[in-house]
Image (cartoon, rainbow, N blue to C red; front, side, top):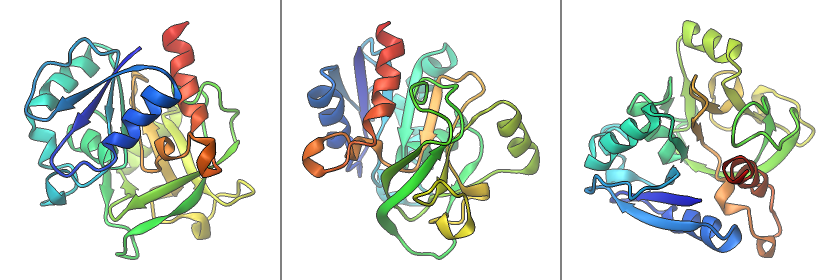
Amino acid sequence: MKVGVLVFPGSNCDKDAVWAFQNMFGQEVVELWHKDTDLQGVDLVFLPGGFSYGDYLRSGAIARFSPIMQSVIEFANKGGLVWGVCNGFQILCESGLLPGALLHNDHQKFNCKNIYLTCESSNSQITNKIKPQSVLQIPIAHGEGRFYCDEFTLTTLKSNEQILFKYCDADGNISNDANPNGSLENIAGICNAGRNVFGMMPHPERVVDAEIYNTDGRILFESLLQLVEA
């Protein structure tokens, strides 16, 4: 599998993603600069976390207009796999590849800590190996992670099984206390209707190496690679 990791001015999790795909899973990785337009024949585009363009205006609002994003949009519209984490999720929402928006955390503070997620659907290429209602411990690091959408969009996400992850406690209970940013119905990750574009606020690429005592993020990568390489 050939993975393209996008790099914007202000990206700071691009190297984490490169390390995960290349060193942990043995995949070919190319770094795609925001001013380029050639995706170099990749099988997957990964949009990393960080603060593209300093998060001016809104997080992801300027990066959405980078030259590389037009190529990403065309790639996704043809069924190409696209995965955005944190700032990458924000950019995908700003570009219209995913519904909804990421707003300022309800407590107006930056959140950087380990949280728990429960898998809401195994019907996606990043969750197909995860048993529904399984609990994963994954770190977050964001100031604008509060997922929001209108009622019609929420109903559509539910009926199409597009909600992939929700924030929960260590026992899998979904509650306000387990919600780190005020996200609508504790939503932490979704996919598009075509099930080829995925976005989530937590950082699975940071928990794939046993040397940091947590490998809960590995199963997302393994799910994706299992289907692509089958």
